[in-house]
Image 1 (spheres, one colour):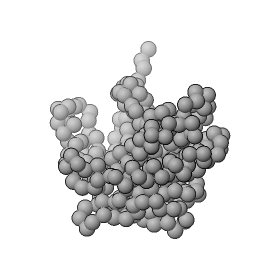
Image 2 (cartoon, helix red, strand yellow; image 1 turned 135 degrees about the horizontal axis):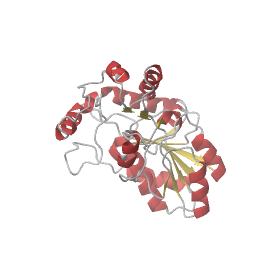
Image 3 (cartoon, helix red, strand yellow; image 1 turned 60 degrees about the horizontal axis):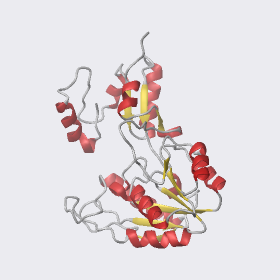
Length: 291
């Protein structure tokens, strides 16, 4: 077990609770060579470069089973028959929960043209009410990013959005001189070819894109190297069925977002990874059938 450098304490607590189970390998920081050489099962949540190294090592060694959960650029599609207040709440939480630091965050918010302007207006009003501050203060609704590297990456992508012509509705800057606080940010008039619409930001930056038809938005939602999560807000069952069958994503949420249980398989398509996680699927991925 090799936790993130920023979260090694959590990893140690888990293993201490398990009394350092037989066969568990614990490393204080990411010693990638040890993971690559380890003959057992490899399960990794990391960026795609590390995932590719693990896959290559598995093929070159003992073809061990590998489960990978990597990046995402998940679409959340809002049809014009959606309940506006419900859509705002779902889209808001899909992106801004944990300050956007979620692998399946609904970062590409597609809104049908009939409700686009109203949606943007109401979303900006809601986002401006977020309270930045100490995460341990119960009044705080918006905390810092994980570290300086991620903080700078987010600010750089915000600048790219401005340079490429997206409309900054709110936010877009760092907040204060202490800590890695990025203002909750909303862009409208975003185009699919912009960096902010293609790259995983992993921060509090919402991109709102306009679409006309269901088939159009399915094609655009699938036009990405990733395929981790996706969401749809609609009152039409046929629309929900067509979208869920057509979108290339490991998870499809309808009229909700990022709702999982221990029994729910979680994983991605394409460069978002392979294999599935959460309790039942982990048991299947880490054991072998024997006749």
